[in-house]
Image 1 (cartoon, rainbow, N blue to C red):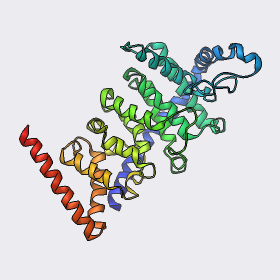
Image 2: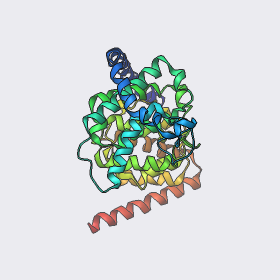
Image 3: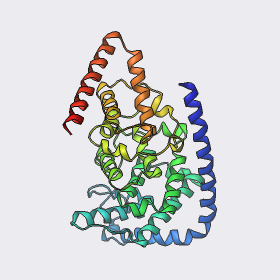
Image 4: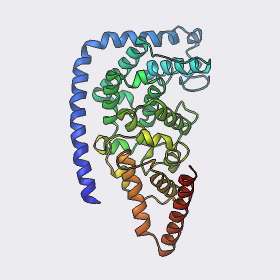
Length: 327
């Protein structure tokens, strides 16, 4: 297992070096775009500053993702205003029963400038972002994937999202992510994650950037309910996860280091392998994860546990055998 982990780590380091070069290029090229960045923020922030309630020094919302409530002059997550504003517009359009056929150029530019500004802050002025947890920043960025495929598949936005994600995947930073605690401005992160799984299965085209962002809550250290959601109710998303292992931007120990003990999830691993929903060719990364944990379960548990696993395996083969025969 150690040899596999070492080889995977070498592949990942190669991918990170390429991303580091991309970050440098984006920061250098973005120096001439600060005027446009300022214009974008003026467009989204000024309506709040002109709000009548600003006379009293308060504003009616403390986050664009929250219900109304008294708070600061502009939302606490104002650095993400362009992204969340475009997301809110998309949500309101869909709720009205209309379909978004194409994301507008203005929306694309707004998202790009927002991401470029955030990247500059993360690299050059990280203290400015300290009041916002990494979980909160990550949750705001996820909104981009729910706006429409035109947005997250745009090459400029893809490069910026990947660059930001790389900054979030250092060992020290990963420890700061916490999806069990309340994330400011969100009623339920779990519901957002489920929406993303549906979106990923529907229109991601197996995009590697989207895939990497989905992986964050699936670490072994996070609540098992996120892994169960993917492997259970929303297992169709697994079919779209064709990203090769070398393109995973996090160390494999995040997914393999702690042995899975939840028997319900282990059953879901086995079910998706037997049904070929997950296979080495179609879904190499999650196939590795499932086989790794299943093998540890088989060889590390007591004799009673092995007997239970064998019985479960037999039942699943019978179940899928009947299913294939019926079809």
